[in-house]
Structures are given as C-alpha cells and as structure tokens.
Amino acid sequence: MGLFERYLTVWVALAIFAGMGAGAIAPDLFASVAALEYAQVNLVIAVLIWVMIFPMMVQIDFTSIKDVGKKPRGLVLTLFINWLVKPFTMALLGWLFFKGIFADWVDPTTATEYIAGMILLGVAPCTAMVFVWSQLTKGDANYTLVQVSINDIIMIFAFAPIAGLLLGVTDITVPWDTLLLSVVLYVLIPLVAGALVRNKLDKANDHSQLERFLSAMKPWSIVGLLATVVLLFGFQSDTIMAKPQAIVLIAIPLLIQTYGIFAIAYLIAKQMKLPHNIAAPACMIGTSNFFELAVAVAISLFGLHSGAALATVVGVLVEVPVMLSLVWFANRTRSWFE
Image (tube, rainbow, N blue to C red; front, side, top):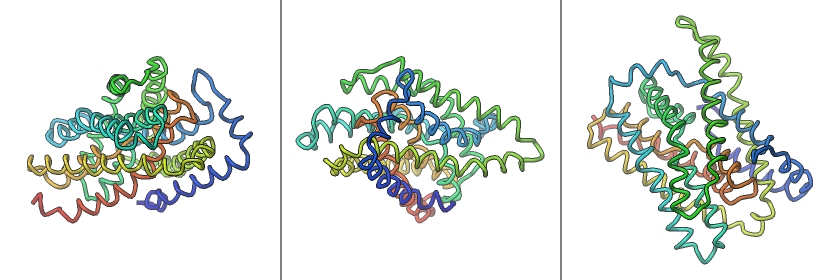
C-alpha cells in the first residue's frame, strides 16, 4: 500500500478543508465551474471522475473470467452480498436514520438527498481499492481479479435498475435518462476503454509496459479524487459551515453499514468453510464501495450542491480507516478458517 492509499483519509480531510476555505474565499470561481454543464453533467467533474476511474478499469483483466468455475463459492458470496444484501441494507439504514432517528435535525428535502447518496454508495461495488485490501490480507490475487471482473460486468446491467428501484421506493424521483447516461459515461465507456488499452499494452510474456502505464497513471487517479473533493466541498462550503454536524450525521449510518455488512459476509464465509485467502478478499469486495462512481452519479442526478453528492463524499472519508480496521481484524482471525 503506497503513501497516498495508506493516508487517503488524511488527504481527503485536507481536501475538504481546502475546498471549504476556497469556496468561502472565491465563491464566484466555484459558481463559474458549477455552470459548466452539458446534459446535466458538469464537464469539469466529468473529466476528474474519468481521471479517477480510467486507471482502475485498465487493471481489470477480463481474460481471468475463464477461471470463474474453479472456485465458485467465494464468487457466490461476493455476488450475494454486493447485489442482494448491501444495496437494500444501505437504503434501509438511510431511511431509518434520516426519516426516523435524525428527522428532527435534518429538513425533509435534505434528508431525502442524503438517503439517495447512501443508496448510490450501496449499489456501487468496489473496483480499485479491493486489490489493496486483498494484498493486505494475503488474499489470492488472481481470484480477487476474477471477482472484480464479474462484478464490473454485472454493474453495467444491474446498477441502474437497482439504484432506480431503491430511489423510487424511498420516494425519490428518478431521472432515468440521466441515470442511464451516467452508467454509460462512468461504467461502460471506461471499462471498454480500459480493456482496449490493456489489450494494447499487455503481452502474454511481458507485462512491463502495462505495469509502467499503471504506475504512471496511479498518482493521477488520486489527484482526480482529491480535486473532486475540493470542488464538491467548495460548492457546499456555505451549507457545511452553517450545519457542520451534517458530516457526522451521514457518517454514523455509513459506519454501521460497513461494519454490519462485513460481519454478515465474514460469518457466512466461515460457515461456507472458505479458505482465508478467498474469504477475506470476498468479504472486502462485498463491504467496500466504488465511491468514485457514486460521486459521479450523485452529481449527475442531483447536482453539485446536493445532499446526495455530500453523502457520497463523506463515504470516501469514512471508508478507508474503516476498511483498514477490517483488514486488521481479518488478519487477526486467520485461524478461524484453518
């Protein structure tokens, strides 16, 4: 794990403070950036999201899918958690907290947007950071790649229907054209482009060219993430300074969701008697989120200044330290799977 990944929460926190400060000092500049839209897509944010997502997609090796039948149980666990459990528990927790427990502290419109942001986080299974969590838990790297590849293919077809269903159930108007456009822009096109670049650079007996490319692109992915956070918190600086407790209120259900989903997945993995090098990464994939995609879709659907966009960015802030604590726990409980 590199310096940026290990201290990602610190960098995100610094980007938050930088964005809020810049938004207070130069609101006209942020207003000008916010106005650069086409078909409800902010062009600056779209470029930054692509900078974030594209290097991740180049890592995906779709030729690994041929090995899917070798160890199917770990994949079944991941798919069950990612598509049949996590999106629905996230929606339930969002509704429980922002329509119930926190209802007196958040106005109804903002509460609905927070729930929408949480739902988008819950429907987006992790793509990039999973490789880090797998490495830290001494997981089977090839099998982790198979799981991520299958999830990404499913995401092309399942993200919009499940997100639309849960947003609709929670009484949120779903602009289907924008939702489908977001899937094409931020999932399908980057996946295809990543596969084409990987096919061009990767050779059967020489992976050095691909590795050099990924190494060169990796810092830009982090830069894209941090620049997006700066912009989002710059756009929302007035709102956050007026209500700083918003970040805490959003973080509480996200923490419960993350630890709860891991507990469910880990107990099922133990009952299935999976080997630890399959179980740990499978549970990490099921627990963590593709927050870059969630941020992009939230902005497209609800706008840069929305509570949904804020909720997805708080997801970035929460996820890394929580996942590191789960890595520690998984490593300490390796003997459970022996």
